[in-house]
Image 1: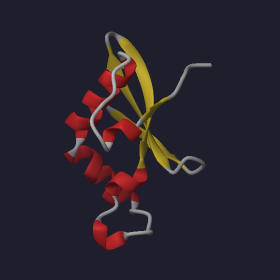
Image 2: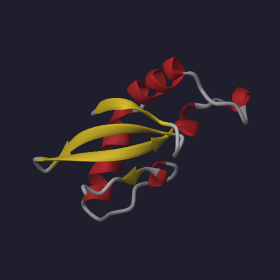
Image 3: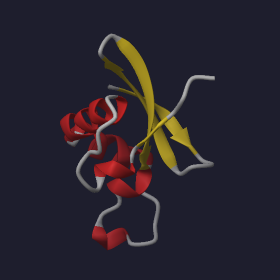
Length: 85
């Protein structure tokens, strides 16, 4: 999984991950990285990157499942795959 930055329009981080030999782009909501002490606040980039690193396996598993037409467990079911144009 490689983080490609924040998409301000969707308030998500763009990540790419290989699934079955294909590169898949997904949007991971930045709110996942916000702790309860930050309700209503955006996490810093540092906090978001640290959170994604700590939850890498769960994020990758969710992307794998979504790419294969399955539904991941909450809250990772909120990750969205982007379609190639």
